[in-house]
Length: 440
Image 1 (cartoon, rainbow, N blue to C red):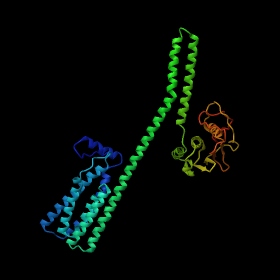
Image 2: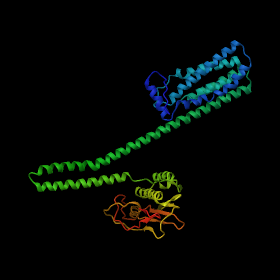
Image 3: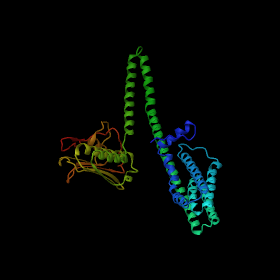
Image 4: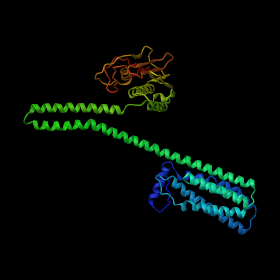
């Protein structure tokens, strides 16, 4: 909801009010902190009217009450706007802070002296406004002064110990409530601003990292390509053989650069386990499949990046297969972590696959080499094997399908962990679902 309110005759302030409302910091909602106390005056005013006061006294009291609440509502409304400001406003002069309080105190005291102890309720509104002032020390001073004034008025009007004590207690309690509410509201806003700043800095840092990576990857190689292309152009007429060599170097550098860029993009797209767990919940809910998670997401923090990437791919692949092939109604994801290993398991109660079809890789060494990265279960099995892990996929005895990956937290000596282009592939069974589709 957009709110535009003109406080002063300038367009800048109008823009500020709209931004504050869009940010969830509506001055109307904050104003409720002061409006909420208005019903407290109802019994006092009703009792005054039932006492059949004289015309002069009635008019005087009505004018004083109207002036009191006019100042109270106007000053609290403006103060609410100051509090929701998107950027800090200039500090108010002491006169602007204390003058409304002094006027309210004067009117409230006059009504108590003229009409009796029943009008002590006006001081509840005064303390509600004074207690909201920042900083807190200023508010505490105002509340203490009001409590002393209520005691003095009680002695002058012979209000009695009970009535005076009750008024002092309400002033103290309302002042404390207002201070607590304002502290909670401002702290919440400050935390929100801090979170937004952290997110902005994270995005900026990531952009700088990507820019730095691209500069490191492309800067030198593109300069080399430009230089060799220019040299080849000059050699075409005088030494075609050397020009062919230079063109060959240009092709080699271009292919190398292309592969480096692909590897960099692949690293940017690597999933995280926590994000994949949240994503699994959303996609299963959208597919109408009941989801249950067993484990603690803190088990995924901290994990070595290669291990977290493989576990994230496991959750993604398992959930994707469930949605596409299983016809399941329930899905269970378990995350277990011990001192030496971490395991993620994705199971469903769908139609499953043939019991004879299963995939299992355990302690399978994968030699480093070039090759294309596999897709689906085949690629996942290769990733697991590259980390000396265990990969199980197949039908469960009770029905449904089970995909489980267990990875050691400590890699064997001499093992090189590479999450990118897959190492030499090894035969892995590809599981058909009961409807004839292939789980890949």
